[in-house]
Image (cartoon, rainbow, N blue to C red; front, side, top):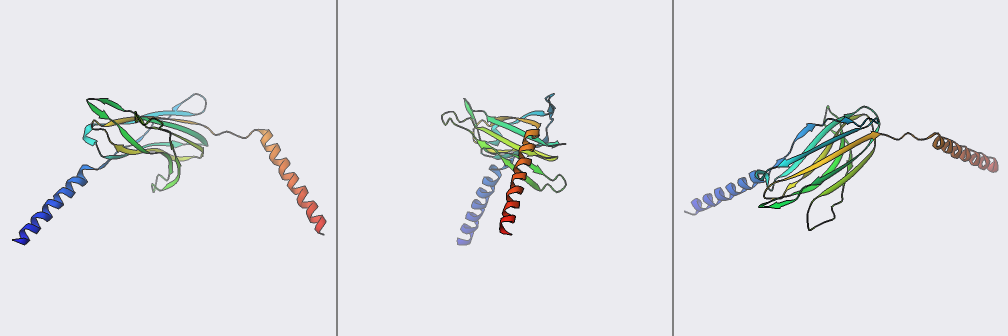
Length: 195
């Protein structure tokens, strides 16, 4: 009789664990975004995702891929929506970053992490910003991660701006050359004084 009770308790425990693991899943999407020209040598993209109430309590990781053919700087922002009308639509954003990766091996080469700028706790709309300077030719994606905490799901929207990396002005090179020249003069005088 004890064996039956132990087996029954084990089956109930296993079923509840299986149900809990099936309930809290990771969802998300990976898509290639269209970088639209800004007519000034850079690009813009807008993207986002909407989760229904079926995904409440699930975590998500979305990746928005793009390729750069030159040296650029970028900036991006993200805002999640908060709506309370019958149900609550709300997300908790936990990751907003630009990732350079190897498209053959999918190995991460560099990550530029965003900053959570959410200020209002009464209306929990998440706001994030990131800046990534010195992006070189290669494959990238914007990664957005978080958890769907609203019983009605939730949504977010984001934009990405990519601009040509600043090239130093000729005056900058002149100052750098002058500084190196002064270092050479000091080193030569020091060497002569020691001789």
